[in-house]
Image 1 (cartoon, rainbow, N blue to C red):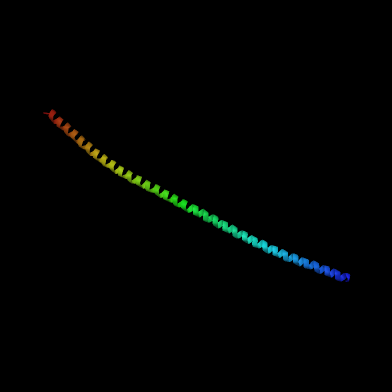
Image 2: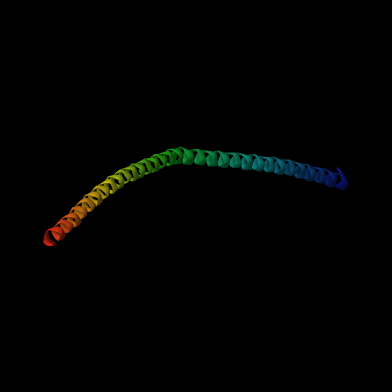
Length: 121
């Protein structure tokens, strides 16, 4: 074999090794892309699971809070209604006592007038 043919053979062998290395590199790049895609999918799944868990926890808590607030509102409405009834009752009592006082005052004036008439001949 001549030195030129030996060099050509070596060159061809090196080119084949480079092609194999390029092929391996592309395979590895493809594998990296595949793994990155899987990682993104898993992250998305985790995010969705976290969101679902958050909602599963939050929605019942919000409903519970809503019921609590509704109960508080109902209690407040009942208190307002009771206070209105008490106010109406008190207004009625005040009105009655006012009438009684007016009647008594009228009787006092009447008695005073009667006493004046008795004192005057």
